[in-house]
Amino acid sequence: MGTSRSIVESRRAQIVEALSEQGRSKVTELARDFGVSTLTIRRDLDYLAEKGVVRRLHGSVELIDPLGGPISSSAVLAKRSIAEEAATLVEDGDTVFINTSSTALSVIEHITAENVTIVTNNGKALQITPPPGVTVILTGGEIRLPKWSMSGEFALSTVRHINAAKAILGCSGFSADRGLTTLVSHETSVNSLMLDHSDMHIIVADCTKIGTNSSFRYGRAEQVDILVTDENSDEQQIALLKKAGVRMVMYPGGE
Image (cartoon, rainbow, N blue to C red; front, side, top):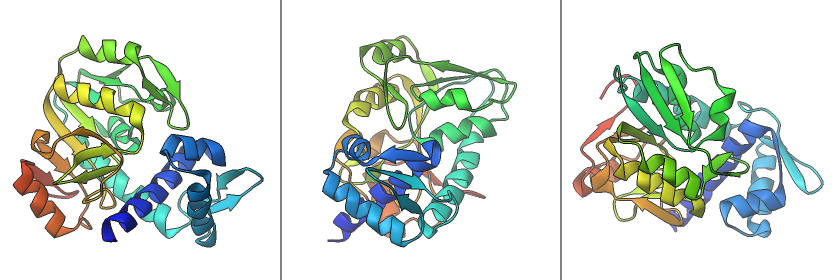
């Protein structure tokens, strides 16, 4: 029961995240991208509408205010602080993989290291202005909305030809038993390959992701060198992740 509720809460938070990036989306597109029925998505949207976070339209939905509801407000603040903390792990001369996670993408803006190369399959990297010492390379590939993720053989081929110092990846869920999971099936192969072709694995995940299992697995807990999360993460779940092989857990403002 608790795990099921966590999955629902995580999906609703990600719906808000997707809408905060593009403002409006069709119900059918959300159902497709999250791999659930339109009935399930409508229930999620009804809940978010009752909270005053979204406005239902004919066949679509729009975000009223990215910071206007309890879900979006806490998520935005947590993601921002996690991104800032993860950015401190990037060193001069690093090549860093970043996946389609909005939290991982936000890391770019906070990097202070010099001569850093970011390789990402997140098309929304085009919408941000990187610091002067950062170069951004897109993997290319088939574009998938609403996240503007790049997938397919073209994206995989790019990642295969790179050995990165670090991979900073987000996830839909991270638990001791299932490891790193995502709600989006076509992202698993790119995420897995980024882990395989990097020396240090850094996972950025707010408290809604910790202890949660999503549909598609892309990595094991023992592959994670550093988990950057917020102080609201469940202590028991964090302990289980450490026991499963996560080497270090960092929180914004201190380890």
